Every structure is written in C-alpha cells, then in structure tokens.
Image 1 (tube, rainbow, N blue to C red):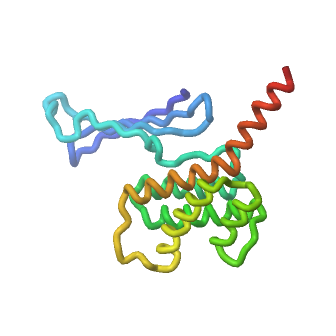
Image 2 (cartoon, rainbow, N blue to C red):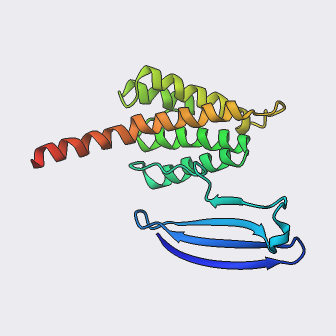
Length: 188
C-alpha cells in the first residue's frame, strides 16, 4: 500500500491524532487509518489511548460486480445505509434495486408485483428467488408508502440486504461467473 501520513496535536484533549491514508495496490481505492494516542507520556492512561479506526469500515459499502452500474450503485448505497443504521433507507433502496433489476431484464407489468412474477415466468429467477423478491417488495413498500409507524430493526434490514444481494447474484452475478468459467475452459 502507498501511504500518506499526517499528525496533529490536539491541546484541548492532550492527544496526538495520526491519520494515515493508504492507496490499495490491488484495487486502487483509498483507505484511512485514524489513531489517537496521548500527547504526553505522562498521560499513558487516557480515555482515547490506542483507539484506531479504519475508514471505510469493513462491510460499509458492498461492491456488486457484474451488475449493471446504475443498479450496483443503488445496491451498494443500500448496504452503506445499513452500515450507518439508516434501516428505512435500506428498505427503500433494496426495493428500488429489485424494481430496477426487473426493468433491466425487460419484465413488464403495471406494478412491482407483476414485474417480479414476469421475471419468474421468463426463467430469469427461480421460485425461491421470486419469493425473496416479494419479501423485499413487502418490506420496501412500507417505506415507499409512508407506513413506518413501527421502527425497523437491524435484523430486519440485514435480512432485506441479504435477500437483495441474492437476487442480484441470481440475475446478474451467477450468470457472469458461469460465462467467465466457460470462456476460460474454451480458451484452454
């Protein structure tokens, strides 16, 4: 990793903050490590001592390879919303991702229910995945129609993100993996 570093002394809290930016040699993306240490040796037992945080946090934003960019971006944003506790936004975006997926695959219908059914009828998704898509739709409908009197739990939002991910895998990612394996076999 390529590293850039900066140290700052904060007199208010008697701490030294070190921020290091790293460029990943593999993916080329930037990561940052922020660490806080006592500014003076006499402050060895300080509330901030040894605190380190990496940004972006692991799992903060999932990347969806082999998914059309506009859909992958929205799905990635849904995972970001989940990571910061914006669970209603997670549900809204996950539902929108399912709808965008259906549209991308040419599934027609007057509403998302019919588009999901059309995806299954065309063979783009299995019955199990169709049921998953409907669960995401149900969850997201509450957000889309302002029916959120009850709080959304972390567990509920996590399930919705996982279902959304599985739908994207079946429609886009799994076929792309198969095609890469097939092309590699033919090349040998």
